[in-house]
Image (cartoon, rainbow, N blue to C red; front, side, top):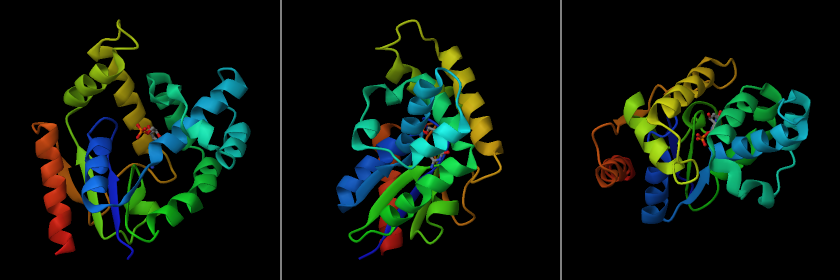
Length: 209
Ligand code: DC
């Protein structure tokens, strides 16, 4: 059985939490595609010692190992910015394309979250959900996640960072962040985690029939 759920939306809207819950409930494989771009961004930063070199980034994108994908430092704010920068480079997206497309159509069902899943990676996905939340709420959520490692980090700083990243992700020429025409919109601004997950599960259940 092939069944794909595409979850897109801006940073910290709740995509990961929803995706993990859906994967568990329906037994689907789950791919957090942001971690691919984060792994490329972090490696490119290292190799370029602070400057992201497009050629290096593209070469790295085609050669990611499991170790690269499981690095502890992928979740930092700096990794997020680096990911957003390499993600705007067409050769990087090209190098990661086939892997994601194959993952989406694997047997047994799959859920992928990112920015271009419903538009580019799997336009034929059976369910597409675009998850959003207000900028302020997203910044508060992300600050709570990051503050254990960065105690001085303020919500205001995270807000600036998120807005810069969203603007870059939405404005790039290749595979910009946007809802697919047939995506269902899920605004999690006023929802608890449980309520957001319940809404997503209900939307999918309805499509499954
Ligand atoms: O989902 P995330 O915050 O971990 O993603 C990090 C960056 O990677 C994001 O700012 C843009 C990029 N990205 C992308 O361009 N396309 C995707 N499908 C997933 C992430």
